[in-house]
Length: 150
Image: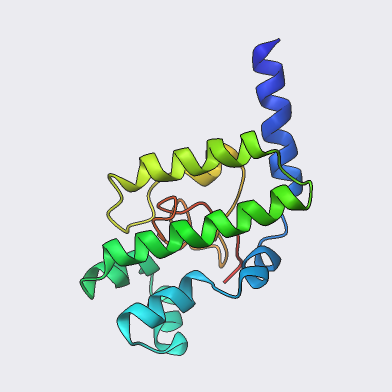
């Protein structure tokens, strides 16, 4: 029964959080915007690096800005989750569980996007572009917990 409840909760999260880009748009900050601000590179330059297979986390790490990137991504993801709680799409308990998983994962985040936190929760904070890099843009806010389609 407990497993069934957890499965139902995860299914609800998956169903509710498929909106991706809109969640980032509501905060006005996307992973590429954060990486651009921290590295001084344009969104276009970063997008080209992203297409070549680099994650935004890797790009931030190469610029010596990984810790700042992780911090800003966590704040961005908290804002997205807070809005989803306000909209009734998630419970505060679900949001807290996701934030804890992100925070725990950031301890070992190397910017590569290899974490599967977003997959576990079905959140999808950044998978976009079919990059196949686990969590999409390696943003270390989960070391990616996916909400955009960039």
